[in-house]
Image (cartoon, rainbow, N blue to C red; front, side, top):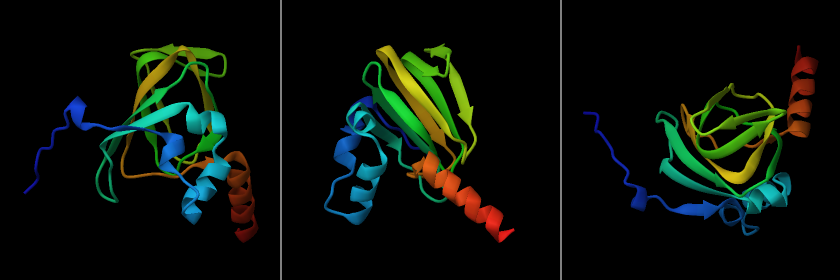
Length: 147
């Protein structure tokens, strides 16, 4: 039988992204090479529901002020809900209360506002992918060659 689960704020631990990936594993070292230092050091993540292949994922991201996040994509669709501060996408600025839907495998970049940024990120299942612009270009080229 399905079970209702609750997470209290004090049960959520926030980890700086740079501490999530270390050079002791090949996967960690690869992520550190892909994600620019400003992003690695300029944000913290706290998981409410980590997700799985068949469970939803929900986490909070806390960004330092004026951090630029390079163009990237994720495999899964996501919804970002701004809790505080401001997110800047191109010339547009979205304050607290704004929601942004980003389809999976869509490149996007953003910048946190001058007062920082806190947002919830919701995905339909666990997704820890980080696809750079160059990786996306290579994947699309390979897909075209197969066709």
